[in-house]
Every structure is written in structure tokens, then in C-alpha cells.
Image (cartoon, rainbow, N blue to C red):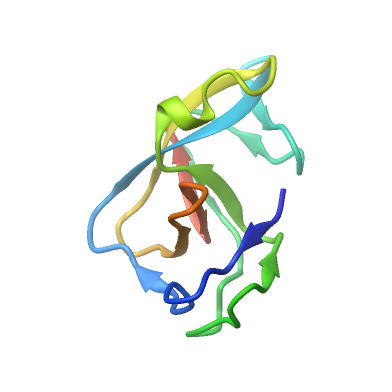
Length: 112
């Protein structure tokens, strides 16, 4: 999965409140695993990556590192035979949004 930086959305934002988002994951024991990168998630645990350090990115740049998620449940529902789970991008996280694809990329995420 590759996040595309859109024109007028090139500046990294800092979440001023928790942001609800959605991810496709599949169950593995008590954990859940992300579809593309194989990240392991536990319910309620903060996941962090040292990404999105720049204050601004180039338009049309593709970003693959970080936590990818969808801003709308209906947009994401039913794409793969995995579970669609609710996540939170916590307050204070660095993130970008792609309004054309209703997608986020962030440096932190929590599975609810």
C-alpha cells in the first residue's frame, strides 16, 4: 500500500484530538496482523513508528512507511477477506491525509 501525497495536502499535521480511522487486519491468536506490511496489533496498545519527520513532502510523492488507515468505514469495507477494525490516530500524532482516497498515514495508531 502506498500513500500518495496530494497537492494542497503536503504539510504534516499534528492531531489536536484522537482521529477515528479503519484498517484491514486479520486475526492471529490474540493479535491482529496488517494486510500489507504484517504489523502486529494488540487491542488498546499504542503502536509507534519513527516516520513523518519532515514538515512537508512533495506533491505526488509516494510514502510507504508509517501506519496506513482509512478515514471512512464504508469506503474500506469489503475489499479483502480480512477484518475491518476500528483504530485511533491518537492526539499528538503526526499524520497526512489523502482526501481523494479517504486515507491517512500516521506515525502512531491504536486498535480499539
